[in-house]
Length: 286
Image 1: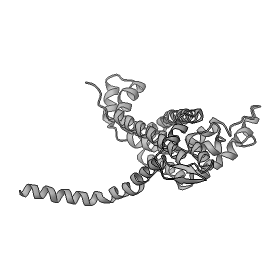
Image 2: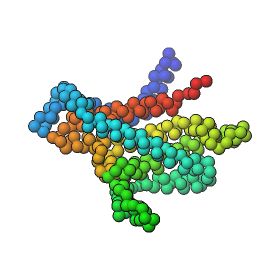
Image 3: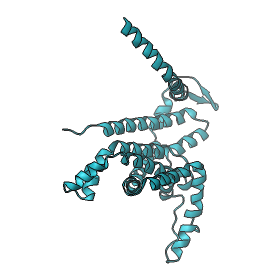
Image 4: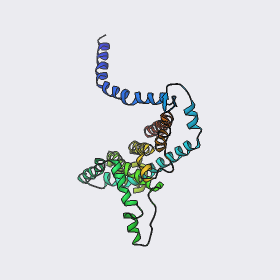
């Protein structure tokens, strides 16, 4: 009986501390999500939403080729951004984790955080000066007789914006993950005859798998839902899903159809997130 009372008292104590985050999730995530799902079944008549239960919005959006073109383009660009950012970030993270002193690592991580002191929109607009046909890059290339190249309003411009968004964060996450690896295990691998490359793939990457996967997942989520880079650097063509949401709301105030697109985006991200976490924490077969 005493044990049961203690358990109940402990559960109440734990619930008290959990209550703020539970309330926050209900107010700012679960509530808006449920409203978004409900709104997807509304109809717009005379530029006003009418509360009803109708699958017309789902049928219209999911039967249109432009939606699937935008979906595939968004998914492909987010996947490419994740792969490119992971490949670019890993050498820098490896160097910060194993090749520099603690003092250098602290300063490097500080400077990686500095870009987040300014608005992402401001950082994106700064690329106009750099990537324009008369910008910095083309001016430098003109000295060797190359260019000018069109980099704005292309998929390349979008990718540059994605790197601006995710690369500093990815280097930070990878560095934190790699720095937790026991260096004695790396030395043991070298003593057993493993070269540097084999040590990276056989020891370092498997031990840092959770951090690497989580970092890549953040990269995919941010790129998949980004609006600023595809709109301002990519020229909004081809359309990404975020731009499609904007265009849909402008077309006759079709918020219910935009809700359908948003739900499809969130469903995709949930599936990718659960699959990635399951892969990250999956134990190797013995």
